[in-house]
Length: 167
Image (cartoon, rainbow, N blue to C red; front, side, top):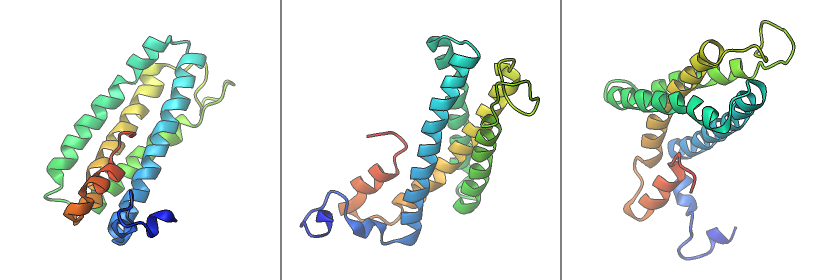
């Protein structure tokens, strides 16, 4: 609340006055929270259930980075021809498809879930790639809509709030 009364606040509330920008910041926060939760739980599955070492688990996540780069490149090329809401919507649907499948983890022999007999290449990698494709498709339009129309005095905080990297 102190931010409302100081002369130069760290996070001026006027930056959230634009509805599109405020929604973009909120959705980006949710997407990043889901991504970090996915990394934590999936690393637990890869290491504790599948028996990968820490280094092997790190290498198992490399395709996620490649998928984000590829889909973000595609999304940036499509931004001039497709409404950002459509790109973010398709990306969100794809980004949610992966975790929904990966959350179905069971240590019993239920064929609908992942367990100790799961294979990285056939059971995890396709969903990791689907998820990374979705995240890359979401990051580009959300970042652009979050910083669009931000004044010069607020450009730093607008960029910082929409940044996928932790501060």
